[in-house]
Amino acid sequence: MAPLGPFGAAPRLAAGVSGGPHSLALALLADAWARARGGSVLALVADHGLRAESGAEAAGVAALLASRGIAARVLPLGLAGGPGLQARARSARMATLGAAAAADGRAWLLLGQHRADQAETLLFRALRGSGPAGLAGMAAARDGGAVLVLRPLLGVVPAALEAVVASVGLVPVRDPSNEDPRFARVRLRRALADPGGEGVGVAALAAAATAFGLRRARDETALALRLAAAAEIRPEGFAWIEPGALGRDAVAAAALAVLVRLVGGGGLAPSVERAAALLVGGHGTLAGAWLRPAVAGRWLLARDPGGLAPPVPAQAGALWDRRFRLVGEGRAGWVLGALGHGAPGLRGRSALPSAVLRALPAIRDPHGALAAVPMLDYPSPEACRPFATLFAPGMGREFSARPFKGGQPDLMCSANAAGDLPAGTETDNRT
Image (cartoon, rainbow, N blue to C red):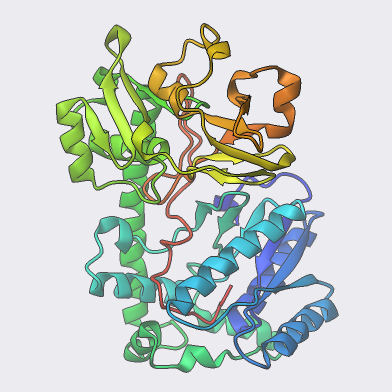
């Protein structure tokens, strides 16, 4: 845990626990660690609902943990069968675990992947042709949105974790999907023929993942520093860029790709090759973002007004254009959408570029009349209060720092939730 901190006094942790031996060991070890520091652990047990017995199993795991004095909560997911089940299950699980941890005031969510899981991840990605970033495997710490996701056991062999569980007399739950050869990860595990994770093959693969991880960390640090020096990301959903500070090298292209993703509202960053072409030209559109020269030698990177998302109901938690979230209480029957060409009352109210103004989130009443522009306090702060809106794009896999002009980047290491494990894989730690 030490390299993953600091945690402060009385740390409040959450841990994803499937009931398998490795996640049970995680719960036991994390509980002992937290108690020694005056803190606590909340075990979160996800019930996918895909097998008739899953609900009883989840309740049994919670009762087992309670018998050890560890608070536990079952989280029913209610997933339906069908295509892409493994990927959907993992996405739902991570979102639910993170939300539950945050709702209980726990900033850290611990997961129980171990050294053999890391070795399998590297091998799986190598077979898929992943590049250096993918071969870095799972990160020990990553930004999970509302929580920081930690994997403190990545260097521990599974045999040691099973011994922890056996030493206190607990009987783990064995998920049959972990023996189903239809899943590629199961086939790879069998090919390695090292269930305890103590052999040379697993050790070598895990060591390779560590080496690639160090390389990824260096690349991400360089990227974060470049963005901190060259980009000012504005709460109105655009960025000012200093071309001289950005540069023209590979790091500059990667940085521009990150900015395009943030401003353009896309689910993924564009390829570095496409970002490099935009960098050379100095103007144009890419992945929903519009780059153009601006005053004082700067560049303006704004949302492409021609690709804005349609309006959504103006209710609490609504996400519009994949970039703006309504954090006020909202109002039934009203909608959140693009300002467009605005209204006469906005003339002279803002010095924002016209492209930025047109892409601002705005509130319209049931008759379609412009009622509020929260980011401009139009028509008044009181009228905008129910519609408070934040620029909240996902930081994504390519960059997980928070860069701000004039300050040091807040570095968060590594990949996003969707990128840590390949779709269609499963581990003994279903959480």
